[in-house]
Length: 148
Picture (cartoon, rainbow, N blue to C red):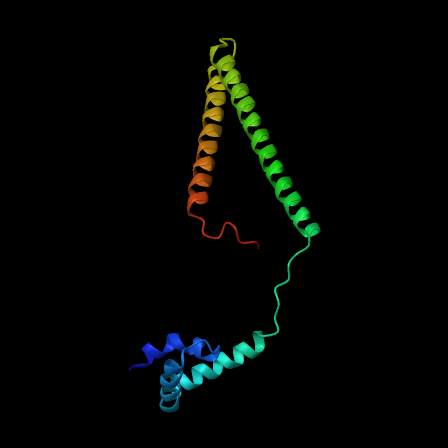
């Protein structure tokens, strides 16, 4: 057999979980195959290093603090979203009223009315451009969750 047939058996051999017939086959293969012998030796060293390791379970205080931080972040995010929505709505309404007042106020010179209209249209164009770019980047930014 090739080494591929023996590789899945190496950890079972090392952990003494194989039946006697397979143990004999693996030992015969290890005697003649230096690659598998070096691999089983690396597994043996790895097992020695990790043998004394234990999983540390966090206490309840850690989990309470963790969930508190999660809730705080969620609350703040929702708060900022609501503030942003309110600002956008009120700002849009104010710009609309300013634009309507300036365009229909015949007492203002035409250049002032055109300037105000250009200012409002330019602001709206920039706002749409920034929002569109943020939406596009949020869908394609692979490194968004990496802390810098």
